[in-house]
Length: 140
Image 1: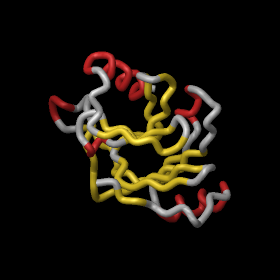
Image 2: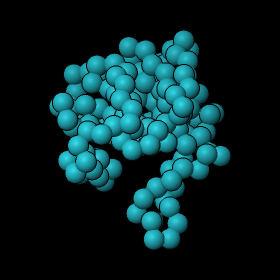
Image 3: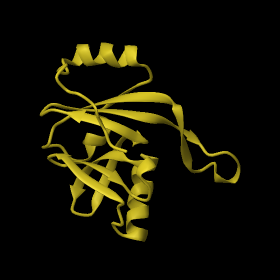
Image 4: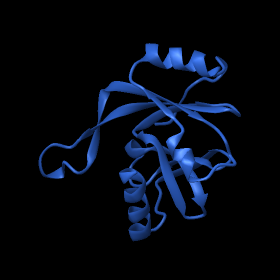
């Protein structure tokens, strides 16, 4: 919830100065506000309001009509005085499964699974019935 509020505050302060914006499907977008490293899947609630789903640091994505899958770097706090901000540990990949429902509103941000290992990701993928035809595409 803090990230959603932070994103809304940043957008209101800086406008919609995205360095990257691409629609995935329906109201789901890939958004990077300042740098590509901060790329995230977001749900667009209105023309100028987006909510992050599953965190930032996305570097690969795949989808079909039922699910969005991402690979993302693990977010970690920046050391020292910048500890309110995050950076990414690029040696750790996390996986995210986002069930798609283009009719929902803000609860879209609460309906996802972050899996810390490929083994857990594959197990959850199978449990949810996510198609093996979805492949990841590099974004950066």
